[in-house]
Image (cartoon, rainbow, N blue to C red; front, side):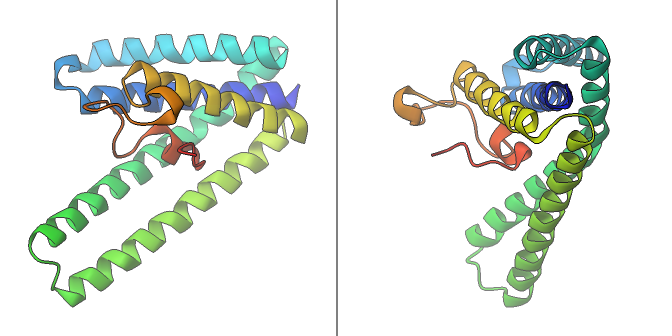
Length: 186
């Protein structure tokens, strides 16, 4: 029961992040805030339904799981924005020749802080999920999140056959695997 809720929560988060990431990377998909919110809500609802079915959750478990996942969404979005800003600054520093030692040291420190924050969010979410679902269901939820992440990246052109990036494909910074704290590139 707890595992299913965790799974639903993870799927809801994944859906929101993938939709946000895909829209951010594809200028042709830019929509107004209302359209984007509606699309995100539809994706979340679909992911919640899939999670509920796959993990065989009760309605109560599904609602609890969704609440936990949504509770961590804002923290992940903030972390992701900060990570993207750090990556852009690193790229700019490298294009400038990468010789500013003070800034390079600051960026290394910032990236380390971001990784620690990422781990803290992951651990806090796992703890919250374990309050709802047994450990085996939490693992099942993680597996489902990975599967959904692969499918979504594939739909946006992120992964080709054998997990390789297609030329000109989507994906890029801030993709779903980073948000989930799981390396899906292997």
